[in-house]
Length: 307
Length: 244
Ligand SMILES: Nc1ncnc2c1ncn2[C@@H]1O[C@H](COP(=O)(O)OP(=O)(O)OP(=O)(O)O)[C@@H](O)[C@H]1O
Ligand SMILES: [Mg+2]
Image (cartoon, rainbow over all chains, first blue to last red; front, side, top):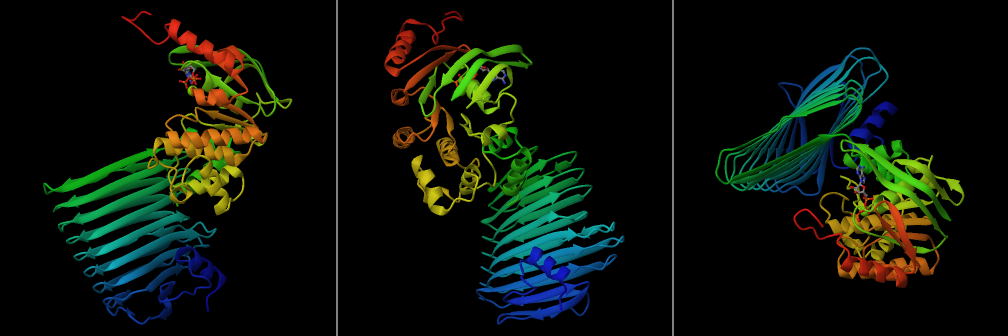
C-alpha cells in the first residue's frame, strides 16, 4: 500500500494518479521493489548481479509505455541503481522515469540512477525524467543521474529531463552515441534556488552518416544557486548538430556554460548558441502594462520559459 | 477624459541631460479617435510611455478621469484602464500567443474569443494559437499580436504606437476596419501614433508633436495639408555636407 507522501511524489515525477498507470510499471521505494507490472510486449526483470532492472521491449511494440519511478522517503538513504533498456527494432515506446526525494530528517538522501538504452534499428523512443525534492529536514536531497544511449541506424530518441524544485545537489551526465540516420533531441529544464548546485555534462557523438541532434537547455537560477553546463557534441561523419543554452539568472545566482562542438568530418555541421542573463526589463514592463504586478509578471515569464 | 498639464520628461544618460518632452499640455475627450503624428524623434513614443508610466516624468500632471497617474505604478495605471501597444513589442520564449492574450484579457479566454482577436488584426488564428511569442515570429506578426493584446484588454484608453509599422497591405486594411469599428461603437478613447495617411484620415483630430512640444492640433483636413507643405518647403530630412 502506498502512503500519501509516496502517491504525491509519484504524481509529480511520473504523472501517476494514486500511483497507478497503464502499461508496464516498476515502482521502487527506498531501495526496494514496491510494485511491478509487465505488459504484453514489455518485460521487466530484476538484475541478479547488482541493484536495478532490465527492461526488454520487443521489436515492433507499439502503443505501450513504461513507468519506472523511484521514491526516497527515508532520511539518510543512499540508493544506486542500474536500469538497462533493450528496445527492439521498430518499437515505438514512451518511457517515463523520475525520482522524488522526501527528506524530513537531517541526513542526506541520495539517489544515483544509471540508465542505459540500447535503441534498435528504426525504433522511436520518448524518454522523460523528472527530478523533485521536498521535505523540511536539514538533510540534503542529492540526485546524480546518468543516462547513456546507443542509437542504431534510423533510431530516434526524444529525451526530456526536468528538475524543477527541491534538489540540493545534482550532477547529471548524459551520453549519446548515434549511428547512421539516427536522431536525438535532448531538452533539459532546470530550476535551482537557495543554495542549490547543479551540474550537467553531456556528450553527443554523431558517428553515423546523416545523424542529427538538437540539444536545448533552459534553466533558471534563483537566490544563491549555481549551475554549470558542459554540453559537448562531436561530429564524426556527415551530420548536423545544434546546441542552445538559455539561462535566466536572478538574485545572486551564477550560471556558467562551457559548450564544445568538435567537427571531425568536413560535412559535419555543428552550431552552438548560448545566452545567459536576467529577465529582460521590457518583458516585465509589457506584462505589467497588461495589469500584472512585477512579481506576477516574473512568475509568468519563468513559467513559459521552463514549460 | 485625459488631461495632461505641463508634462515634461528629462533623461540623464552618458550623453548628459536631455529634455525630451517640454511642457506638454493636452486634453482628450472620452471616446475620441486621436492620431498623434510628427517627425521621428519628436517625442511621440515618450509621450505615450509617460502616460503608461514607462517614461520618467520630471514635471507636470497626467489626469485620467480626474485621477492623477503621475505617482501611480504601471500596474495601477493598467488597472485604471490605460493600455499601450509597444512600438517595439518584446518577445517571450515559451509563452504561447493564446496565453499572452489571456493575460491581457485578465482571464482565460476560450478558443473562439482568442481567434476573434487574432482575426481582428488579420492573423489566421489556426496558425498562431499554439505558436510561441518568440523570435520565430516575423516582425509584422509580433506587431499584430501586440495590437491584439490591446484589443483583448478592452481598456477605456487604448494607445497604439505605430500599429502600421511592418504590416502588410491586407492586414493593414483589416486593422483600420478594426479601429473604425471600436470608434463607431464608442468602446474606447483611441490614441494612435501614426505616420499613415489612411489612419490620419480616420481620426477626429490630429495632434502634431515635434521637438518635444505639441506644435499643432486640429481636424485632419486642416493639419494634414500643413504637414505636407512643411515637408516640401522645409529641410528636415535632406542634409548636404553636414549642413542643411
Ligand atoms: N531613454 C532615453 N535616453 C536618451 N534619449 C532618449 C530616451 N528615450 C528617448 N530619447 C530621445 O528622445 C527623442 C524622442 O524619442 P521618441 O521615441 O519619443 O520619438 P518618436 O516621436 O516616437 O519617434 P519615432 O517616430 O521615430 O518613433 C529622440 O531623440 C530619442 O532619441
Ligand atoms: Mg516612436
